Image (cartoon, rainbow, N blue to C red):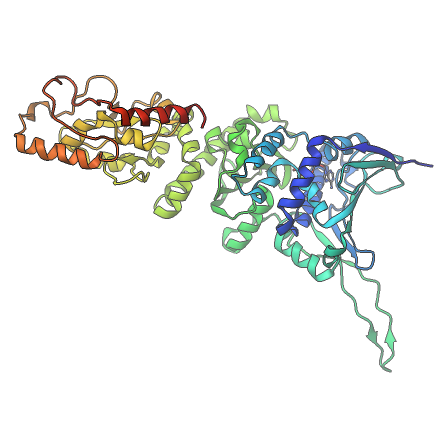
Length: 561
Ligand code: ADP
Ligand code: MG
Protein backbone atom coordinates (compact mmCIF):
# COMPACT_ATOMS: atom_id res chain seq x y z
CA UNK A 1 0.00 0.00 0.00
CA UNK A 2 1.10 3.53 -0.68
CA UNK A 3 0.81 6.53 1.47
CA UNK A 4 0.84 9.99 0.06
CA UNK A 5 3.69 12.18 1.22
CA UNK A 6 3.01 15.84 1.74
CA UNK A 7 5.36 18.66 0.59
CA UNK A 8 5.22 22.42 0.99
CA UNK A 9 5.65 24.70 -2.00
CA UNK A 10 8.64 27.01 -2.15
CA UNK A 11 7.69 30.52 -1.11
CA UNK A 12 8.20 31.68 -4.70
CA UNK A 13 5.80 29.07 -5.98
CA UNK A 14 3.07 30.45 -3.78
CA UNK A 15 3.72 33.92 -5.11
CA UNK A 16 3.69 32.71 -8.69
CA UNK A 17 0.49 30.78 -8.16
CA UNK A 18 -1.21 33.82 -6.71
CA UNK A 19 0.05 35.97 -9.50
CA UNK A 20 -0.90 33.55 -12.27
CA UNK A 21 -4.39 33.02 -10.97
CA UNK A 22 -5.09 36.70 -10.57
CA UNK A 23 -3.33 38.23 -13.53
CA UNK A 24 -4.42 35.63 -16.05
CA UNK A 25 -7.99 35.27 -14.90
CA UNK A 26 -9.28 37.33 -17.81
CA UNK A 27 -7.36 35.09 -20.18
CA UNK A 28 -8.04 31.81 -18.46
CA UNK A 29 -8.52 29.69 -21.56
CA UNK A 30 -4.77 29.71 -22.14
CA UNK A 31 -4.38 26.94 -19.54
CA UNK A 32 -5.02 24.42 -22.31
CA UNK A 33 -2.38 25.91 -24.56
CA UNK A 34 0.16 25.78 -21.73
CA UNK A 35 -0.54 22.15 -20.94
CA UNK A 36 -0.51 21.11 -24.59
CA UNK A 37 2.71 22.99 -25.08
CA UNK A 38 4.27 21.03 -22.20
CA UNK A 39 2.96 17.79 -23.68
CA UNK A 40 4.47 18.74 -27.03
CA UNK A 41 7.82 19.55 -25.36
CA UNK A 42 7.68 16.13 -23.69
CA UNK A 43 7.15 14.46 -27.09
CA UNK A 44 10.02 16.48 -28.58
CA UNK A 45 12.27 15.33 -25.75
CA UNK A 46 11.34 11.70 -26.22
CA UNK A 47 11.99 11.86 -29.94
CA UNK A 48 15.40 13.33 -29.22
CA UNK A 49 16.23 10.61 -26.65
CA UNK A 50 15.07 7.99 -29.13
CA UNK A 51 17.87 8.95 -31.51
CA UNK A 52 20.24 7.23 -29.07
CA UNK A 53 17.76 4.69 -27.76
CA UNK A 54 15.17 3.79 -30.43
CA UNK A 55 13.43 1.33 -28.08
CA UNK A 56 11.95 4.33 -26.23
CA UNK A 57 9.80 5.23 -29.20
CA UNK A 58 7.22 2.50 -28.73
CA UNK A 59 4.30 4.18 -30.47
CA UNK A 60 3.48 7.29 -32.42
CA UNK A 61 3.87 10.37 -30.31
CA UNK A 62 0.60 12.14 -29.66
CA UNK A 63 -1.39 14.23 -27.22
CA UNK A 64 -4.92 13.37 -26.12
CA UNK A 65 -7.48 15.72 -24.63
CA UNK A 66 -10.39 14.12 -22.79
CA UNK A 67 -13.15 15.47 -20.62
CA UNK A 68 -15.96 14.33 -18.36
CA UNK A 69 -18.75 16.86 -18.14
CA UNK A 70 -20.34 15.18 -15.14
CA UNK A 71 -17.19 14.79 -13.08
CA UNK A 72 -16.10 18.20 -14.40
CA UNK A 73 -12.62 17.10 -15.40
CA UNK A 74 -10.34 17.78 -18.34
CA UNK A 75 -7.41 15.44 -18.92
CA UNK A 76 -4.38 16.05 -21.10
CA UNK A 77 -2.36 12.93 -21.87
CA UNK A 78 0.92 12.60 -23.71
CA UNK A 79 3.14 9.61 -24.42
CA UNK A 80 6.30 11.67 -24.30
CA UNK A 81 9.30 11.62 -22.01
CA UNK A 82 7.48 11.61 -18.63
CA UNK A 83 9.10 12.49 -15.31
CA UNK A 84 10.80 10.63 -12.49
CA UNK A 85 9.84 11.40 -8.92
CA UNK A 86 12.87 13.68 -8.56
CA UNK A 87 12.04 15.47 -11.77
CA UNK A 88 8.49 16.09 -10.63
CA UNK A 89 9.83 17.66 -7.45
CA UNK A 90 12.40 19.71 -9.33
CA UNK A 91 10.17 20.82 -12.22
CA UNK A 92 6.77 21.26 -10.67
CA UNK A 93 7.29 21.99 -6.98
CA UNK A 94 10.02 24.58 -7.34
CA UNK A 95 10.88 27.51 -9.50
CA UNK A 96 14.31 27.12 -10.92
CA UNK A 97 14.32 30.02 -13.33
CA UNK A 98 16.45 32.82 -11.89
CA UNK A 99 14.50 35.41 -13.84
CA UNK A 100 11.34 34.60 -11.95
CA UNK A 101 12.45 36.27 -8.76
CA UNK A 102 13.34 39.46 -10.54
CA UNK A 103 10.06 39.25 -12.35
CA UNK A 104 8.15 38.99 -9.11
CA UNK A 105 9.96 42.04 -7.84
CA UNK A 106 9.12 43.99 -10.97
CA UNK A 107 5.48 42.98 -10.79
CA UNK A 108 5.29 44.94 -7.60
CA UNK A 109 6.04 48.01 -9.70
CA UNK A 110 3.18 47.19 -12.07
CA UNK A 111 4.72 48.98 -15.00
CA UNK A 112 4.14 46.21 -17.49
CA UNK A 113 1.29 44.13 -18.75
CA UNK A 114 1.42 41.06 -16.52
CA UNK A 115 -0.35 38.74 -18.86
CA UNK A 116 2.19 39.30 -21.60
CA UNK A 117 5.08 38.38 -19.40
CA UNK A 118 4.03 35.49 -17.36
CA UNK A 119 4.75 32.80 -19.90
CA UNK A 120 8.39 33.79 -20.12
CA UNK A 121 9.28 32.36 -16.77
CA UNK A 122 8.34 28.74 -16.97
CA UNK A 123 5.21 29.16 -14.90
CA UNK A 124 3.05 27.71 -17.66
CA UNK A 125 1.93 24.66 -15.72
CA UNK A 126 0.49 26.79 -12.93
CA UNK A 127 -2.05 28.17 -15.37
CA UNK A 128 -3.96 24.95 -14.56
CA UNK A 129 -5.04 26.48 -11.29
CA UNK A 130 -6.86 29.32 -12.98
CA UNK A 131 -9.60 26.88 -13.91
CA UNK A 132 -8.98 23.95 -11.57
CA UNK A 133 -9.14 23.69 -7.79
CA UNK A 134 -7.36 20.37 -7.86
CA UNK A 135 -4.75 19.13 -10.31
CA UNK A 136 -3.25 15.69 -10.55
CA UNK A 137 -0.17 14.77 -12.56
CA UNK A 138 0.31 11.07 -13.23
CA UNK A 139 3.58 10.33 -14.92
CA UNK A 140 6.01 7.56 -15.84
CA UNK A 141 9.43 8.36 -17.22
CA UNK A 142 10.13 6.68 -20.56
CA UNK A 143 12.33 3.63 -20.12
CA UNK A 144 11.54 3.21 -16.39
CA UNK A 145 9.63 0.23 -14.98
CA UNK A 146 5.93 0.76 -14.20
CA UNK A 147 6.47 0.77 -10.43
CA UNK A 148 8.30 4.07 -10.81
CA UNK A 149 5.13 5.91 -11.83
CA UNK A 150 4.19 8.77 -9.57
CA UNK A 151 1.21 10.95 -8.82
CA UNK A 152 1.46 14.62 -7.86
CA UNK A 153 -1.65 16.28 -6.48
CA UNK A 154 -2.31 19.79 -5.32
CA UNK A 155 -5.08 22.27 -4.72
CA UNK A 156 -2.68 25.02 -5.74
CA UNK A 157 -2.69 26.61 -2.31
CA UNK A 158 0.49 25.83 -0.46
CA UNK A 159 1.26 22.14 -0.61
CA UNK A 160 1.23 19.07 -2.80
CA UNK A 161 1.33 15.32 -2.25
CA UNK A 162 3.38 12.65 -3.97
CA UNK A 163 2.34 9.04 -4.20
CA UNK A 164 3.50 5.98 -6.11
CA UNK A 165 0.86 4.72 -8.53
CA UNK A 166 0.38 1.98 -11.06
CA UNK A 167 0.78 3.39 -14.58
CA UNK A 168 2.07 1.17 -17.31
CA UNK A 169 2.27 3.61 -20.20
CA UNK A 170 5.13 6.07 -20.46
CA UNK A 171 4.35 9.75 -20.46
CA UNK A 172 2.22 12.14 -18.49
CA UNK A 173 -1.44 12.63 -17.71
CA UNK A 174 -2.67 15.91 -16.27
CA UNK A 175 -6.12 15.77 -14.71
CA UNK A 176 -7.83 19.05 -13.98
CA UNK A 177 -10.73 19.07 -11.54
CA UNK A 178 -12.49 22.19 -12.70
CA UNK A 179 -13.80 24.81 -10.32
CA UNK A 180 -17.60 24.84 -10.32
CA UNK A 181 -17.72 28.12 -12.20
CA UNK A 182 -15.32 26.84 -14.89
CA UNK A 183 -17.20 23.65 -15.74
CA UNK A 184 -17.90 25.04 -19.23
CA UNK A 185 -14.43 23.84 -20.24
CA UNK A 186 -15.47 20.19 -19.85
CA UNK A 187 -17.12 20.43 -23.21
CA UNK A 188 -16.32 18.90 -26.55
CA UNK A 189 -16.95 21.95 -28.69
CA UNK A 190 -15.21 24.33 -26.33
CA UNK A 191 -12.06 22.20 -26.13
CA UNK A 192 -11.89 21.63 -29.86
CA UNK A 193 -12.17 25.31 -30.60
CA UNK A 194 -9.43 26.10 -28.07
CA UNK A 195 -7.13 23.53 -29.66
CA UNK A 196 -7.81 25.07 -33.06
CA UNK A 197 -7.23 28.56 -31.74
CA UNK A 198 -4.06 28.00 -29.75
CA UNK A 199 -2.50 24.69 -30.70
CA UNK A 200 -3.26 24.18 -34.36
CA UNK A 201 0.43 24.13 -35.29
CA UNK A 202 1.75 21.90 -32.57
CA UNK A 203 3.73 19.42 -34.64
CA UNK A 204 2.22 16.37 -32.90
CA UNK A 205 -1.33 15.12 -33.41
CA UNK A 206 -3.73 16.35 -30.72
CA UNK A 207 -6.56 13.87 -30.50
CA UNK A 208 -10.05 13.95 -29.09
CA UNK A 209 -12.75 11.31 -29.17
CA UNK A 210 -15.05 11.66 -32.15
CA UNK A 211 -18.61 12.65 -31.43
CA UNK A 212 -21.05 9.81 -32.07
CA UNK A 213 -24.83 9.84 -32.13
CA UNK A 214 -27.32 7.02 -31.77
CA UNK A 215 -28.55 5.85 -35.18
CA UNK A 216 -31.76 4.21 -36.29
CA UNK A 217 -31.99 0.91 -38.14
CA UNK A 218 -34.32 0.31 -41.11
CA UNK A 219 -37.25 -0.35 -38.80
CA UNK A 220 -36.78 2.93 -37.02
CA UNK A 221 -35.33 1.38 -33.86
CA UNK A 222 -32.48 3.17 -32.18
CA UNK A 223 -29.20 1.31 -32.27
CA UNK A 224 -26.58 2.20 -29.68
CA UNK A 225 -23.86 4.57 -30.78
CA UNK A 226 -20.66 2.84 -31.84
CA UNK A 227 -17.63 3.19 -29.61
CA UNK A 228 -16.05 6.53 -30.39
CA UNK A 229 -12.50 6.61 -31.64
CA UNK A 230 -9.82 9.26 -31.32
CA UNK A 231 -9.49 11.69 -34.20
CA UNK A 232 -6.87 14.32 -34.85
CA UNK A 233 -8.10 17.85 -34.13
CA UNK A 234 -5.13 20.00 -35.15
CA UNK A 235 -3.08 20.38 -38.31
CA UNK A 236 -0.13 18.54 -36.71
CA UNK A 237 2.42 19.34 -39.39
CA UNK A 238 5.53 21.41 -38.94
CA UNK A 239 4.40 24.83 -40.15
CA UNK A 240 7.91 25.94 -41.03
CA UNK A 241 8.24 23.10 -43.55
CA UNK A 242 5.29 24.31 -45.62
CA UNK A 243 5.55 26.66 -48.57
CA UNK A 244 5.11 30.27 -47.42
CA UNK A 245 2.41 30.70 -50.07
CA UNK A 246 0.33 28.03 -48.31
CA UNK A 247 0.40 29.79 -44.97
CA UNK A 248 -1.98 32.52 -43.91
CA UNK A 249 -0.89 35.42 -41.69
CA UNK A 250 -3.12 34.19 -38.89
CA UNK A 251 -1.37 30.82 -39.01
CA UNK A 252 1.98 32.54 -38.73
CA UNK A 253 0.71 34.54 -35.76
CA UNK A 254 -0.74 31.49 -34.02
CA UNK A 255 2.52 29.62 -34.49
CA UNK A 256 4.46 32.60 -33.18
CA UNK A 257 2.46 32.61 -29.96
CA UNK A 258 2.97 28.91 -29.61
CA UNK A 259 6.76 29.07 -29.78
CA UNK A 260 7.38 32.45 -28.17
CA UNK A 261 5.23 32.47 -25.03
CA UNK A 262 4.19 35.92 -26.19
CA UNK A 263 0.50 36.76 -25.98
CA UNK A 264 0.74 39.61 -28.49
CA UNK A 265 1.08 39.30 -32.25
CA UNK A 266 4.52 39.30 -33.84
CA UNK A 267 5.41 42.54 -35.63
CA UNK A 268 6.72 40.79 -38.75
CA UNK A 269 8.58 37.69 -39.87
CA UNK A 270 10.60 36.06 -42.61
CA UNK A 271 10.18 32.48 -43.77
CA UNK A 272 12.55 30.77 -46.20
CA UNK A 273 13.56 27.40 -47.50
CA UNK A 274 17.22 27.52 -48.40
CA UNK A 275 18.67 25.04 -50.84
CA UNK A 276 22.24 24.75 -52.00
CA UNK A 277 25.46 23.75 -50.29
CA UNK A 278 23.38 23.92 -47.13
CA UNK A 279 19.76 23.11 -46.98
CA UNK A 280 17.61 24.43 -44.16
CA UNK A 281 14.37 26.19 -43.40
CA UNK A 282 13.98 29.20 -41.19
CA UNK A 283 11.00 31.04 -39.81
CA UNK A 284 12.12 34.10 -37.88
CA UNK A 285 9.87 36.53 -36.04
CA UNK A 286 10.37 39.99 -34.64
CA UNK A 287 8.05 40.54 -31.64
CA UNK A 288 5.95 43.67 -31.37
CA UNK A 289 7.11 44.29 -27.80
CA UNK A 290 10.42 43.73 -26.14
CA UNK A 291 10.13 41.01 -23.56
CA UNK A 292 10.92 41.84 -20.00
CA UNK A 293 13.52 39.09 -19.72
CA UNK A 294 15.63 40.46 -22.56
CA UNK A 295 17.25 43.09 -20.42
CA UNK A 296 17.59 40.95 -17.35
CA UNK A 297 20.13 38.50 -18.61
CA UNK A 298 20.95 38.32 -22.31
CA UNK A 299 22.62 34.97 -21.65
CA UNK A 300 19.32 33.39 -20.66
CA UNK A 301 17.62 34.15 -23.92
CA UNK A 302 15.45 31.58 -25.56
CA UNK A 303 13.16 31.54 -28.50
CA UNK A 304 15.20 30.22 -31.39
CA UNK A 305 14.67 26.54 -31.72
CA UNK A 306 16.97 24.25 -33.63
CA UNK A 307 15.43 21.27 -35.40
CA UNK A 308 17.27 18.75 -37.50
CA UNK A 309 15.08 17.00 -40.05
CA UNK A 310 12.03 18.02 -37.98
CA UNK A 311 13.41 16.62 -34.75
CA UNK A 312 13.61 19.26 -32.06
CA UNK A 313 17.22 19.36 -30.86
CA UNK A 314 17.46 22.30 -28.49
CA UNK A 315 16.84 25.93 -27.80
CA UNK A 316 19.89 27.27 -29.52
CA UNK A 317 19.42 31.01 -29.66
CA UNK A 318 23.06 31.73 -28.87
CA UNK A 319 24.41 29.26 -31.38
CA UNK A 320 22.18 30.57 -34.16
CA UNK A 321 22.16 34.35 -33.77
CA UNK A 322 24.50 36.93 -32.23
CA UNK A 323 23.52 38.65 -29.01
CA UNK A 324 22.31 41.87 -30.58
CA UNK A 325 19.61 39.97 -32.47
CA UNK A 326 18.37 38.25 -29.32
CA UNK A 327 14.89 39.67 -29.77
CA UNK A 328 14.33 37.37 -32.76
CA UNK A 329 12.24 34.27 -32.14
CA UNK A 330 11.61 31.32 -34.38
CA UNK A 331 12.63 28.01 -35.78
CA UNK A 332 15.57 26.75 -37.83
CA UNK A 333 15.42 23.25 -39.31
CA UNK A 334 18.58 21.89 -40.90
CA UNK A 335 18.74 18.95 -43.28
CA UNK A 336 22.52 18.62 -43.09
CA UNK A 337 23.55 18.76 -39.43
CA UNK A 338 24.11 15.38 -37.78
CA UNK A 339 21.25 14.38 -35.49
CA UNK A 340 23.50 13.46 -32.59
CA UNK A 341 24.85 16.97 -32.04
CA UNK A 342 25.63 18.29 -28.61
CA UNK A 343 25.84 21.95 -27.70
CA UNK A 344 29.63 21.72 -27.61
CA UNK A 345 29.78 20.24 -31.09
CA UNK A 346 27.36 22.84 -32.36
CA UNK A 347 29.49 25.73 -31.28
CA UNK A 348 32.37 24.93 -33.58
CA UNK A 349 30.42 23.25 -36.32
CA UNK A 350 31.26 24.97 -39.64
CA UNK A 351 27.84 24.09 -41.08
CA UNK A 352 26.21 25.87 -38.19
CA UNK A 353 28.48 28.88 -38.60
CA UNK A 354 27.25 29.13 -42.19
CA UNK A 355 23.64 28.90 -41.09
CA UNK A 356 24.29 31.55 -38.46
CA UNK A 357 25.72 34.06 -40.89
CA UNK A 358 22.88 33.28 -43.29
CA UNK A 359 20.33 33.98 -40.56
CA UNK A 360 21.96 37.28 -39.64
CA UNK A 361 21.71 38.37 -43.28
CA UNK A 362 18.04 37.31 -43.32
CA UNK A 363 17.19 39.32 -40.23
CA UNK A 364 19.11 42.40 -41.37
CA UNK A 365 17.47 42.09 -44.79
CA UNK A 366 14.05 41.82 -43.18
CA UNK A 367 14.69 44.94 -41.11
CA UNK A 368 15.92 46.82 -44.16
CA UNK A 369 12.72 45.95 -45.96
CA UNK A 370 10.53 46.89 -43.00
CA UNK A 371 12.39 50.19 -42.65
CA UNK A 372 10.63 51.33 -45.82
CA UNK A 373 7.41 51.41 -43.83
CA UNK A 374 8.07 54.33 -41.50
CA UNK A 375 5.37 53.55 -38.94
CA UNK A 376 6.17 49.87 -38.64
CA UNK A 377 9.85 50.62 -38.32
CA UNK A 378 9.32 53.39 -35.77
CA UNK A 379 7.58 50.89 -33.50
CA UNK A 380 10.34 48.37 -34.00
CA UNK A 381 12.95 51.01 -33.34
CA UNK A 382 11.33 52.09 -30.09
CA UNK A 383 11.30 48.52 -28.78
CA UNK A 384 14.57 47.15 -30.09
CA UNK A 385 16.68 50.03 -31.38
CA UNK A 386 19.05 50.03 -28.42
CA UNK A 387 19.54 46.28 -28.73
CA UNK A 388 20.28 46.57 -32.42
CA UNK A 389 22.91 49.24 -31.70
CA UNK A 390 24.96 46.59 -29.89
CA UNK A 391 25.51 45.08 -33.31
CA UNK A 392 27.62 48.03 -34.39
CA UNK A 393 30.18 46.85 -31.85
CA UNK A 394 29.47 43.12 -31.83
CA UNK A 395 29.16 42.33 -35.52
CA UNK A 396 32.08 43.78 -37.38
CA UNK A 397 31.30 41.90 -40.58
CA UNK A 398 27.84 43.50 -40.82
CA UNK A 399 28.66 46.84 -39.24
CA UNK A 400 27.80 48.88 -42.33
CA UNK A 401 24.43 47.11 -42.68
CA UNK A 402 23.62 47.61 -39.01
CA UNK A 403 24.64 51.29 -39.14
CA UNK A 404 22.22 51.80 -42.02
CA UNK A 405 19.40 50.46 -39.84
CA UNK A 406 20.00 52.97 -37.05
CA UNK A 407 17.73 55.97 -36.59
CA UNK A 408 18.71 59.17 -34.83
CA UNK A 409 17.24 62.31 -33.45
CA UNK A 410 18.74 65.33 -35.17
CA UNK A 411 18.99 69.08 -35.09
CA UNK A 412 17.09 68.94 -38.39
CA UNK A 413 13.99 67.67 -36.57
CA UNK A 414 11.71 69.84 -34.48
CA UNK A 415 11.28 67.20 -31.80
CA UNK A 416 12.90 64.07 -30.37
CA UNK A 417 11.71 61.80 -33.18
CA UNK A 418 14.38 59.28 -34.12
CA UNK A 419 14.05 58.91 -37.85
CA UNK A 420 17.26 60.24 -39.38
CA UNK A 421 19.52 57.68 -41.08
CA UNK A 422 23.22 58.11 -41.62
CA UNK A 423 22.50 58.14 -45.32
CA UNK A 424 20.02 61.01 -44.83
CA UNK A 425 22.71 62.83 -42.92
CA UNK A 426 25.34 62.39 -45.60
CA UNK A 427 22.96 63.51 -48.33
CA UNK A 428 22.40 66.78 -46.41
CA UNK A 429 26.03 67.51 -45.65
CA UNK A 430 27.23 71.03 -46.50
CA UNK A 431 29.76 71.62 -49.27
CA UNK A 432 33.16 70.89 -47.88
CA UNK A 433 31.80 69.11 -44.79
CA UNK A 434 33.54 65.78 -44.41
CA UNK A 435 32.46 64.62 -40.96
CA UNK A 436 29.33 63.25 -39.37
CA UNK A 437 28.76 65.40 -36.29
CA UNK A 438 27.03 64.03 -33.25
CA UNK A 439 26.57 64.74 -29.60
CA UNK A 440 25.87 62.28 -26.78
CA UNK A 441 24.21 62.99 -23.48
CA UNK A 442 21.80 61.73 -20.92
CA UNK A 443 18.56 63.04 -22.39
CA UNK A 444 17.19 64.63 -25.50
CA UNK A 445 16.70 67.89 -23.64
CA UNK A 446 20.29 67.86 -22.49
CA UNK A 447 21.84 67.30 -25.90
CA UNK A 448 19.43 69.54 -27.76
CA UNK A 449 20.27 72.44 -25.50
CA UNK A 450 23.96 71.85 -25.34
CA UNK A 451 26.07 74.98 -25.97
CA UNK A 452 28.28 72.82 -28.13
CA UNK A 453 25.58 72.96 -30.81
CA UNK A 454 25.44 76.69 -31.21
CA UNK A 455 28.15 77.04 -33.77
CA UNK A 456 26.56 74.22 -35.78
CA UNK A 457 23.15 75.83 -35.67
CA UNK A 458 24.71 79.03 -36.80
CA UNK A 459 26.42 77.38 -39.73
CA UNK A 460 23.36 75.27 -40.50
CA UNK A 461 25.33 72.08 -40.01
CA UNK A 462 23.26 69.09 -38.88
CA UNK A 463 24.19 67.30 -35.66
CA UNK A 464 22.87 63.89 -34.62
CA UNK A 465 21.46 64.00 -31.11
CA UNK A 466 22.23 60.82 -29.21
CA UNK A 467 20.92 60.28 -25.74
CA UNK A 468 20.43 56.60 -25.12
CA UNK A 469 22.57 54.81 -22.55
CA UNK A 470 24.33 52.77 -25.17
CA UNK A 471 25.26 55.61 -27.57
CA UNK A 472 28.43 56.80 -25.88
CA UNK A 473 29.75 53.22 -25.76
CA UNK A 474 28.72 52.52 -29.34
CA UNK A 475 30.34 55.70 -30.70
CA UNK A 476 33.52 54.76 -28.88
CA UNK A 477 33.78 51.76 -31.19
CA UNK A 478 32.94 53.18 -34.56
CA UNK A 479 35.11 55.53 -36.58
CA UNK A 480 33.30 56.10 -39.84
CA UNK A 481 30.39 55.41 -42.10
CA UNK A 482 30.76 55.34 -45.90
CA UNK A 483 34.12 57.03 -45.66
CA UNK A 484 32.88 59.86 -43.43
CA UNK A 485 34.42 60.11 -40.01
CA UNK A 486 32.26 60.51 -36.92
CA UNK A 487 33.08 63.54 -34.84
CA UNK A 488 31.67 64.40 -31.44
CA UNK A 489 30.93 68.12 -31.25
CA UNK A 490 31.86 68.02 -27.59
CA UNK A 491 35.32 66.69 -28.15
CA UNK A 492 38.52 67.88 -29.76
CA UNK A 493 39.00 70.78 -32.11
CA UNK A 494 36.06 71.69 -34.27
CA UNK A 495 36.55 72.27 -37.93
CA UNK A 496 33.38 72.64 -39.92
CA UNK A 497 35.30 72.28 -43.13
CA UNK A 498 34.41 75.81 -44.07
CA UNK A 499 37.25 77.68 -42.40
CA UNK A 500 38.26 79.63 -45.46
CA UNK A 501 34.72 80.81 -46.17
CA UNK A 502 34.30 82.36 -42.77
CA UNK A 503 33.90 86.05 -42.52
CA UNK A 504 32.84 88.46 -39.92
CA UNK A 505 29.06 88.37 -39.50
CA UNK A 506 27.23 91.70 -39.68
CA UNK A 507 25.78 92.59 -36.32
CA UNK A 508 22.22 92.49 -37.75
CA UNK A 509 22.58 88.76 -38.36
CA UNK A 510 24.15 88.37 -34.96
CA UNK A 511 21.09 89.90 -33.47
CA UNK A 512 18.62 87.69 -35.25
CA UNK A 513 20.75 84.68 -34.47
CA UNK A 514 20.72 85.52 -30.81
CA UNK A 515 16.97 86.03 -30.97
CA UNK A 516 16.54 82.66 -32.62
CA UNK A 517 18.54 80.96 -29.94
CA UNK A 518 16.62 82.88 -27.37
CA UNK A 519 13.26 81.66 -28.63
CA UNK A 520 14.58 78.17 -29.04
CA UNK A 521 15.86 78.00 -25.53
CA UNK A 522 13.26 80.14 -23.90
CA UNK A 523 12.29 77.42 -21.43
CA UNK A 524 15.84 76.90 -20.35
CA UNK A 525 17.78 80.13 -20.37
CA UNK A 526 16.69 83.53 -19.23
CA UNK A 527 18.86 85.46 -21.61
CA UNK A 528 21.21 85.02 -24.58
CA UNK A 529 23.82 87.65 -25.12
CA UNK A 530 26.78 88.15 -27.43
CA UNK A 531 30.07 87.95 -25.66
CA UNK A 532 33.31 89.53 -26.69
CA UNK A 533 35.23 87.51 -24.19
CA UNK A 534 34.93 84.23 -26.02
CA UNK A 535 37.68 83.45 -28.51
CA UNK A 536 37.95 79.71 -29.06
CA UNK A 537 34.50 78.77 -27.78
CA UNK A 538 31.33 79.58 -29.64
CA UNK A 539 29.40 80.18 -26.47
CA UNK A 540 29.25 79.42 -22.83
CA UNK A 541 26.50 78.71 -20.43
CA UNK A 542 26.18 81.03 -17.48
CA UNK A 543 24.15 79.43 -14.78
CA UNK A 544 21.68 81.39 -12.85
CA UNK A 545 19.66 80.00 -9.98
CA UNK A 546 17.05 78.53 -12.27
CA UNK A 547 19.59 76.64 -14.37
CA UNK A 548 21.20 75.34 -11.24
CA UNK A 549 17.87 73.88 -10.21
CA UNK A 550 17.63 71.98 -13.50
CA UNK A 551 21.12 70.70 -13.04
CA UNK A 552 20.35 69.46 -9.56
CA UNK A 553 17.23 67.79 -10.82
CA UNK A 554 19.26 65.86 -13.35
CA UNK A 555 21.74 64.73 -10.78
CA UNK A 556 18.90 63.46 -8.67
CA UNK A 557 17.39 61.60 -11.59
CA UNK A 558 20.72 59.95 -12.21
CA UNK A 559 20.89 58.93 -8.59
CA UNK A 560 17.92 56.74 -9.33
CA UNK A 561 14.80 58.79 -8.81
P1 ADP B 1 8.14 25.46 -19.04
O1 ADP B 1 7.31 24.64 -19.97
O2 ADP B 1 8.31 26.87 -19.53
O3 ADP B 1 9.43 24.82 -18.64
P2 ADP B 1 6.02 24.83 -17.22
O4 ADP B 1 5.55 25.39 -15.92
O5 ADP B 1 5.02 24.81 -18.30
O6 ADP B 1 7.30 25.63 -17.66
O7 ADP B 1 6.57 23.37 -16.96
C1 ADP B 1 7.56 23.16 -15.97
C2 ADP B 1 8.34 21.90 -16.22
O8 ADP B 1 7.57 20.76 -15.86
C3 ADP B 1 8.72 21.64 -17.66
O9 ADP B 1 9.91 22.33 -18.00
C4 ADP B 1 8.92 20.15 -17.68
O10 ADP B 1 10.22 19.81 -17.20
C5 ADP B 1 7.91 19.68 -16.69
N1 ADP B 1 6.69 19.22 -17.36
C6 ADP B 1 5.51 19.88 -17.43
N2 ADP B 1 4.60 19.16 -18.13
C7 ADP B 1 5.23 18.04 -18.54
C8 ADP B 1 4.84 16.88 -19.32
N3 ADP B 1 3.62 16.80 -19.84
N4 ADP B 1 5.77 15.92 -19.51
C9 ADP B 1 7.00 16.00 -18.97
N5 ADP B 1 7.44 17.06 -18.26
C10 ADP B 1 6.56 18.07 -18.03
MG1 MG C 1 5.39 25.09 -20.46
